[in-house]
Amino acid sequence: MSERRSALSRTLTIGTVALAPPFVSLGLLLLFIWALTAGGGYFWPMWPYWALLAITALRAVHVWDHSRPEERRRPFDALIGYGAVWSLGLIAIWGMSGGHYFWPVWPMLGFLIVLGTPWIWGRSRTNRKLEVRVDELTRTRAGAVDVQASELRRIERDLHDGAQARLVALSMQLGRAEDRLAGKGADAGDVDLVRQARLEATAAITELRDLARGISPPVLADRGLEAAVQSLADRTGSNVTVNAEIDHRPPPAVENAAYFVVAEALTNAAKHSPGAPVRVTIWHEHEELGIVVADQGLGGADPAGSGLTGLRQRVEALDGWLEVRSPVGEGTTVRAILPRS
Amino acid sequence: MTETEPAPTAIRVVIVEDHALLREGLVALLTEHGIEVVATAEDGPGLLRIVAGHKPDLAICDVRLPPTFTDEGIKAALEARRRLPSLALLVLSQYVEPAYSGELLASGESGVGYLLKERVSEVRTFVDAVRRVAAGGTALDREVVGSLMRERHGTLPGAAIDTLTARERETIELIAQGRTNAAIARELVVTLGAVEKHISNIFQKLDLPATDDDHRRVLAVLTYLRATGG
Image (cartoon, rainbow over all chains, first blue to last red; front, top):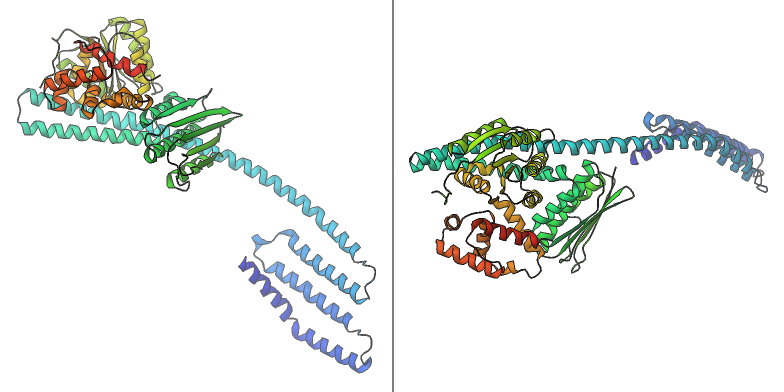
């Protein structure tokens, strides 16, 4: 904005300053002649002054228009500038010729019509282009989100069926080695060494499982949202009731987002109000998936906290919305609406 | 070091596991401990085929199998049991899913096990679990039991289970896994007498009839867990 203003002032300066010396000299000369001849009668130099000012203004508009970077130039800007100068000039003539009936209204109106028609037409064309673009972006974003969700499920699957399966095989071999060594009455230190290796492998499996669950819980992919949320409720360990009515499965991205909304809300409830009753309600209506997680805990959660902000971003990426109400002493309610497609 | 193992009767087992290394490892492990592996398969239809062909006592089954790698293992295992009701099932899973254990437990009267895959590395405990399940008993992973306990704990208003001490809670979780008193005593590093006392306290507090039979004991606990879950 400031760049634009400086461009404007620079061009006005160029437009006026370059013309200033000859015009000011001419103006003074005319004033001098008027003073000598008419001796203070009808101030006729106002007409040449008008002409000089009009030339200056038109030049200023021209210089301004051409001094802007190409990408900033819109076809109607210069026309509006010229039109404004022209209108002001007409109003000046009207004023100088004694006022009365405001005839400049007619040429100005004509100018507006001439200028306005293509402007409105261009505008609607721009709008159409924008609509097409918005459609395209919505579609490609939904595609990207879907691809991402499927990718996450694939990664989870690969972790379980690849790395984890190998680690299980490894830990089983170590277990058998330990068993055999112990059976042969081997040195206790040797047996212990193998046991430590086995426990390390088992710990790695546990970590991998937690990681995979964080990426995309297997039960969600296998059994869908209702089962996954029920499983989540069973795990949370607080007093959770689930009421879910989902008749057919939404796309993976929507399922994932819905799952993580419930997961985060339940985690928060368990952390801040352990033991408080929590009700999870999921329903679907008019191509929308609704989720409400309400606890009867202490409330006072910070809706701008990192967990809830992350959730909001996840939901908004799907054109959904998320709302957190947490008045102190009245519990916390997390609501989300997700479009199903 | 050994659990109070039943006398090794000839157990005939089939294994369904798509990962070759694990499948072969399991076969070797069980064979080493005198359990006969009569056939192996790599997917659900394979399981149904070998169960029909060999009429085994027990099927050890991975949850995730080709082609979709979701929960075919559970579905195939349940289908195999529908066709052969005497079949005991031991399902191995990469992750704990209480819903699966519920489906398995609800599926019939013969033995049921649901363990995390890595439990196979605790060789003796695993072999014990295989024997127990084949004999009609139960082997639930401690993770599964833990989440079932938390679930019930949460949904029972003024639950009787709240009156259990921490020690009693540990004990009931071990019972629910299908452990014997001797195994529980070892795990908790207490005397056998102390375990028996805990158990009688638990049964008293939960109003469950105590019996000497391990399997019925486990079933009683599980019945309680399921019944209170709604």
